[in-house]
Amino acid sequence: MDEASPLVAPTHSVWVSAELRQAVRDDRPGVVFRLARQAAGLTLEQLGRIYGSSASTLSRIERGRNPIDQVDVRRALAHLLGIPGEYVGLASSGGRHAARPAQSTANPATLRAEGGDPMRRRTLLAGAGAAALTTIAGATSPANAADPSGPRLERFLLANQLPAEPFTLQRATADVHAIDRAFRDARYSTVIANLPALLARLHATATSTGGNTRDRITALLSHTYQVASSVATKHGDDAIALAMADRGRNQAVTSGDPATLTAATHILAITMRRDGHHTAALDLIASTAGQLDIRHPDPATLTAYGSLLCTAAYTSAQAGNPGAADTYIREATTAAARLDSHHTSSGVIPFTATTVAVYRIGVHTALGDTAIALQHAMSVNPALLPTPERHGRYLVDTARAWSAHGRADKAAHAVLAAYRHAPEEVDRTSVRDLVTTLLHAPTPTPAALRSLATRIGVP
Image (tube, rainbow, N blue to C red; front, side):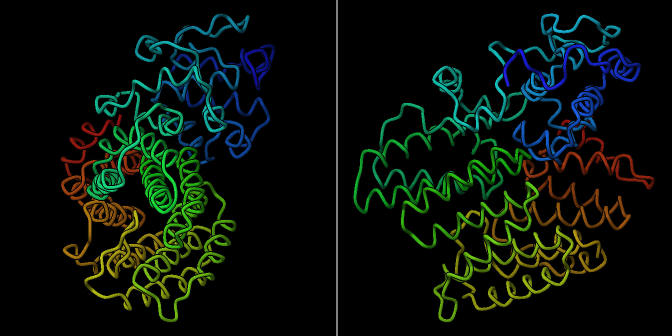
């Protein structure tokens, strides 16, 4: 859809409606987006397919929650729907509509672009042109990870087009292990800053080599795309997470390594589930698990199988199927019990008996069985959690269970503990939403929660 054909016509009555005028005066861009979407006759799911995002992400935007504070998000949606930029706190869009509401009190300078035309995420997913490379190529330094407009995850999409020098298999292996450690340590800004250059060099290396070396480089490339997908998921960017997971699985197929393919399928299933495709995700998991020989499996195969089952359990819970969720999580527990206690998981998301217990918290919270979820939370020995990322995830999941159970105070303490163990696990969109909920809970919460809210950018 080009500049001349916005989803909402310039002559539509919504632009002069009292409700939209009031939303602009009150500086509520989320309401403006909602009114424009409804004027276009679209559901959240339908707009999500056009824009390249999930319905849940768009719902958060319409409710005024992150990622609405990101300049590129506001600009892309405004361009798509035909909303003048000043209606949503951006610079003037050049007079697209004749009738304008009263002037917004928002300061457009705070949301003005640094230059360049808006680029919709769906365009990026289809493959950006060379013009975008000029912008992206110079944006791989760690300083960009602290960009106040949000993490530059779009750079992941163009990494395979960046010019880069190939490196040795030994160096490639070391660098992939380093990025993997950064993710497991919940140092997501480090991952985001360094991933584009690493992906570019891995692609250059895969192109310049052959035989067994190329297969091993391709497996490393698959693993790196899995990390990219996982960190995009952490930041709530489901569209990019899905694109990265798909690329990771394609590279896994090329590598010919069954363990790599299973791990990549696991990550892809997670992104499909987050995008609302529960049935398709379960079908993918079932077909992949059915191809694994678990009668006398090696630890890697058993780990892959158990990881798939955990995701199947959580997917079933979110789909409202408690019977299937219970079956899958019980089988995952059995698989974890069969593992040697000294085995170290090589996947992006570790699989151990303790991490299965953490999954049980999320499964029962999703099913509404918060009392059972909290029983599992209390049964976890934090000392056995394999990584800071899993420790932070355990505490955040526990906080969600306490919040759903009506104990905002307990939930707040869990969030504060998560911040102490893994700060960047808390400083992301979904947890900021949880903190916002806790701040407005009818029961008292610790004063430290407000200090934390300020640190992670909760309004």
